[in-house]
Length: 398
Image (cartoon, rainbow, N blue to C red; front, side, top):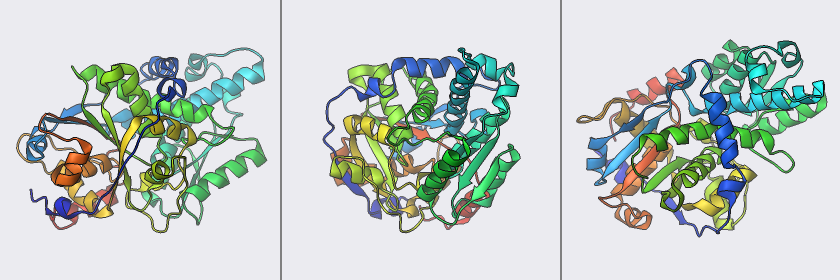
């Protein structure tokens, strides 16, 4: 495979100075992760997703090992988001039904349909680029709650239809992702609905914490499958929930031996690197939409930033031009590497790794060596077949 496009790609790097603190165990506690693990692993259809080694790619990049957590089989929804939105929905229903009945109810009571009448009275809403909304719709369908999903102008119709197929009412707006978040909040407040968001804001923390706790199932599976910690983990950005959850979970599992955290974002939606530069959660204006639809977020989650500000050492931005070649490298592997079909947002970390490992200044800055073992979260499979097919048809320039 020619790597010219990665060699020539212009990446922005910012080396952060993480502030010491306890966010890795305070924002999402070990009990939060354990509760989610206990619940989600008993859901019908649960199975750990594969942690795949890519030995030929590791050799090409002069690394010891490249490990790719393939989330495409997750509950048949094609994305790690299945762990977050549905679990957070269940927790919202648990809290609201407990309050309505004046007694504590369990997640099992709701999951098994014992409180179906009560669940049907509670409408859950969220904004999404696709995968979070699909998870929420799937969870609402399982737990018997009405669901409304707000999407922005650039969300593909295929992703909208996947949510409708799960029973959600889908509302498309003319603005961007952040505008869809604002509308979901406003209409929920006006109608007495409940927002299940993967991003936090002042006064709104429980559902985003539950979303990140749900993601912890994925991190625990990774750790249990490894006999020693990786040296680096490259994590997609977005609002920061995935990166923060994985970073916190790795620290809780491996302690002082936890890997160096590298956050990778689209250059067109780089709110986390800007937050790192400013030393506080910072919103950026999105001028053009990135092909990495799930990462097209201009405002970071405050809770996620609390964790990343203490754990992330490096931030990278990547151009959209790297996504097609990365997807094709996975789907048409070299040597004994397995073939993996991945979505455009799911390969951002891998695209950043390939480019950084091949560019000597970045390789040195990130401490990538022949002994390095790198963990990647392949956070989505083919959630939009048309986009995947178009990327696979592009000329083989990378």
